Image (cartoon, rainbow over all chains, first blue to last red; front, side, top):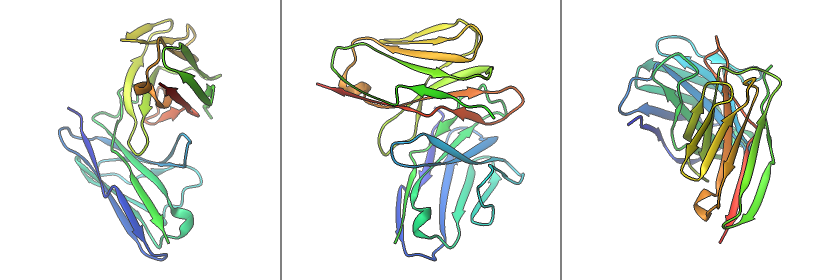
Length: 117
Length: 111
């Protein structure tokens, strides 16, 4: 149980393109979803927290207009990287949780490797 | 701002050796989770510890939560190549939805 599917797993696109990444909870309702960015050989860096039906809460230093997050249903959240540039290349990972409580575990997708040429 | 420092950052050992990874903070956490991440994949939860002083065992892995709930350790006995990966501790803070992730420990176990 508690499966999170992230799509696509790998995307390569030209600079200036907008890219959408989907995160789906397949067998539970995700009250809260998180989006992370991970640089090579480093830990996870939280970008934003989103609760279903509400606006996402972005971490300090993350550009809201650059990284658009939508959490319109209890099973789907999307991250859109607008006008992507090479510096946006990274590994993006989503996670989902069935409750608001941080004591409960997050279930992670397998990540999306984004390469901007 | 809560911070979780893990040590060591990187550990390369031979199969059969024992090791301990530490996760330290000056902040108190209501619970602490340990995850393992393999290259190209998302982290997978190993364990959650909730009570100060709590010890949990998962086969060859032993997890301990500090008495003051500010630190934790992961001990692996007789490491195997399959234990290779990035180990992340993550602390939960009452009243906050997000987890505070540690700096990570990369473990490489060679045959």
